[in-house]
Length: 117
Image (cartoon, rainbow, N blue to C red; front, top):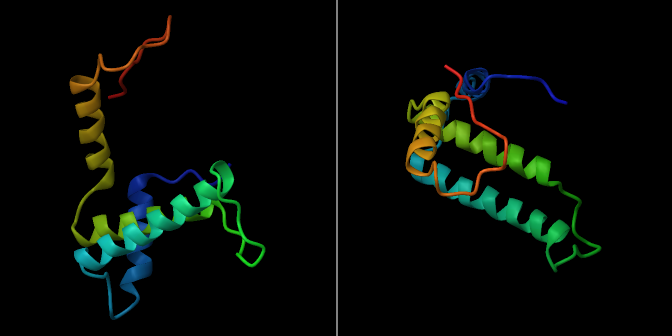
């Protein structure tokens, strides 16, 4: 298993990396385009592994893990550039799912969810 970094640590690490360059972060619109590009690359890898489209012999090997990492990097860049704390954003979305969607799915027998504070 890889290193155990918090979301805040990942955001700080990416910010330290980007801050060393004069250009800094791309604009939100450019980063949205980058997210779309990276998501497309992830979709392509998933399709190669789980879909009906095997890779051509001339195509380079990529991995789903690598593409998820690329997507995460750009997502962190976008959050940093907009001063969004991803841990806080995650907490907000989990609260939404735990309230709005709490009865949407069939729960497994004998399992309960305990929220961490």
